[in-house]
Amino acid sequence: MKNKVWQTIEKFQMCPYGTKIIVGVSGGADSIALLHILKEFSLGQNWSLTAVHVHHGLRAVEADRDRDFVEKICREWEIPCKVYCFDVAKEAETRGMGTEEAGRLLRYESFQKESEGGIIAVAHNQNDQGETVLMRLCRGAGGAGLIGIRPVRDNIVRPLLFCTRKEIESYCEENQLSYCQDSTNFESVYTRNRIRNQILPLLEEIYPKTTEHIAQTAEILGEEQEYLQMQTQDLFFRSAKKVGKSEISLNVEVLQSAHTVLRKRVFAAALEKLGVKRDVGAIHFEKLNDLLDQESGKSINLPNKVIAKKNYDFLQIKKAHHGGKDFCYPLNVGEEIFVPEAGIFVNLKVCTEKKAENDNDGCTKVFDYDKIGCTLFCRTRQKGDSLAIRNGRKKLKDFMIDEKIPREERDSLPLIALDSDILWVVGKRISVAYQPDEATKRYLTVQIRRFI
Image (cartoon, rainbow, N blue to C red; front, side, top):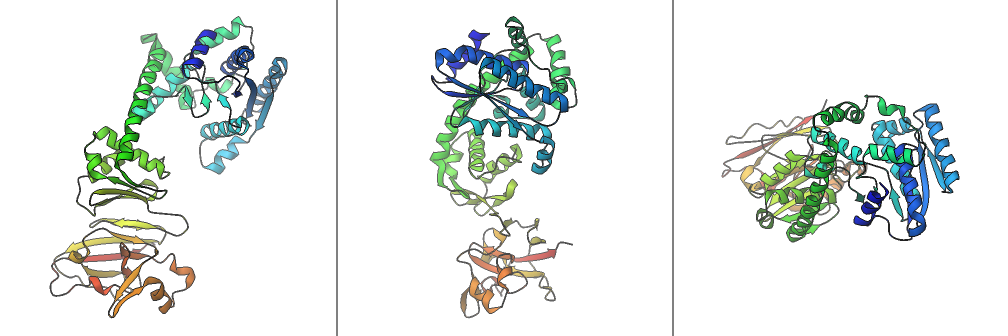
């Protein structure tokens, strides 16, 4: 097994000569075997090892036992040991996540604190890989998810990833290494444990090399994903007109010349650059792909308050919300949009006859639809906003001052806008530029409903 681990370290260039290595040590067979093997290699490689143990505050006496055991074995092996203690249950509640996820985040945060630019070695094995891939497959993951656990990710390495749990336990037995058993691993409460204790053993009865074959598939997919990632980066930068923290603009023609698979990966890359990593799925990439063929001015809403708009030859993907009370929502005809920051619903309808406006509370206004021509937004004010009045134009800021709108209300006041042109300061005044006249053929009714 030592040879297999060394081949893995060499193949993926995990641990350069003379590097500092932080080893995550829980006290289980996997991490004890990893620490022992790295200790064996460290003299010839001039590695500096430090063990890090995280006490989760969840398993009472058993957790204390694991901590004491790790500290004891590190003293015997003359390896520095750092222990971090957390109340993971409380931290999970604070962060709004499950205890498993919170525990994982705290572990890696602790490892990174100690790494100081060095390498972090963790003890995931081939069985962990099989469980992960199977779990993601059942959840409906795509190619990127089915590569499972990678041997190297940033400064995190996994030298045992191609070793089975049986091999690791045999290594511990042969080298007379004691280790701790986590009793919760045998409880089929968590999804992973049910797959580990029930599903995979059943599959192994049918296909004895199930875990090995799943791991091999993950490795093949990983290599293919690396190639696709290079192609994606090339397409992204060929199509990118603008790449900013809040907006990315992509050339439609360049995207349409590429395969759909690469297009969708570019969309994912663009959203990730905007900080959107969660709540985005295949349906959203499909909508973005369809938007490429739509006419200019069409737009869609995406998770995390991001909007995408077809603007002639470019697809604009931008954040619609920048924090505080700011908001920006595209308005589509026939669709009612909820604006939670303002506590209102906005509904747009187009017809060939003018509907009566409700002037009592200013909740409905009618405009000439053909004068507008592209997507409207319900948003807060932006630099350069202005309003068409009967004797010219007026800056929105000056209008708000003249109307004596309190300063604290100006930044959160909902506006119906076309680029920097304000059609309606909701509850105040509408633009004269888009009012219906004798030549009007299509009327746009904008209705505002207060959320109760």
